Amino acid sequence: MLQFNFTPFPVLQTERLLLRRMLMQDDEALFLLRTEEAANKYLDREKPTAVEQVHQLVNKIDDGIRNNTAISWAIALKENPDEMIGTISYHKTDAAHHRAEIGYMIMPHHWRKGLVSEAIKAVLDYGFNSMQLHSIEANINPHNEASRNILLKHGFVKEAYFKENYYYNGRFLDSEIYSLLQPK
Ligand SMILES: CC(C)(COP(=O)(O)OP(=O)(O)OC[C@H]1O[C@@H](n2cnc3c(N)ncnc32)[C@H](O)[C@@H]1OP(=O)(O)O)[C@@H](O)C(=O)NCCC(=O)NCCS
Image (cartoon, rainbow, N blue to C red; front, side, top):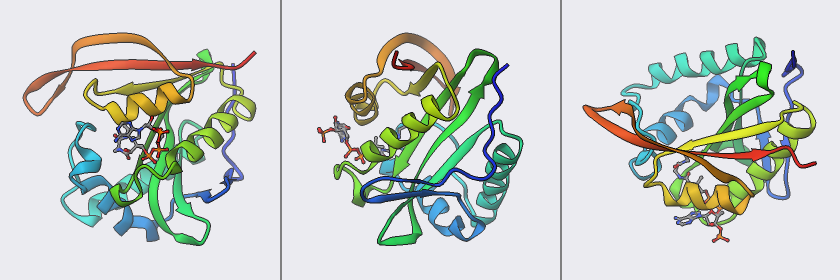
C-alpha cells in the first residue's frame, strides 16, 4: 500500500506564495477564514463561534500531518509569510487507492488574483510527484461556480452528481465530484 510521509513538513513555494505549516499562531486568521460570510457560503459546515474551537482544529490538522493521513498548508504571501490568507489541503486521503481529496479557500479581498490557481498547481504537483497519488478528487456544492471553474481550469473533469446526499442545516444538499488523474 502507498505510504504518505509528511515529515519533514513539505513547504512549497510558488511565484508569489509560501505554502507553509499552519501554526497555533494562525488561530485568529483561521477563525476569520472559517467565519467570513462570503468565503463560507458554499462550504456547508458549522462555523466556529470562538477562537478556542479553532485550536482544536489546528490540533486535528497537526495530528493528520503527524499520522500521515492528511495535510493542510497555510497560504501566505511571500512578502508577508506570517499572515495566513488561505488554506489548501488534502484533508482526506485514501492510501489504498492512491487517491486524495483537495480543498482550498482564500480570504475574499484576495479573490481573482490567480493566487489559489498558483497554490493548486503546486499542491497538484506535490500530490502526483511526491505523494504518488493516482487521482485527486474535489467535492463541491453545485452552486459554487468559482470552485467549479478553478477545477475545470486545472483539468479536473466532472465524475459524479449526487442528489441530496449531504445533510446540512435541516436540508439535503446535492454534491458534485470532480477528479484529475495523474498525468501519464
Ligand atoms: C474558489 C476560490 C478558492 C478561488 O480562488 P481565487 O484565488 O479567487 O481563484 P483564481 O484567482 O486563482 O481564479 C482561477 C479561476 O477560478 C475561476 N474563478 C475564480 N473565482 C471565480 C468567480 N467568482 N466566479 C467564476 N469563476 C471564478 C476562474 O475560472 C478563474 O480563472 P480566470 O481568472 O482566468 O477567469 C475562492 O473564490 C474562495 O476561496 N472561495 C470560497 C471558498 C470555497 O468555496 N472553496 C472551495 C470549496 S469546494
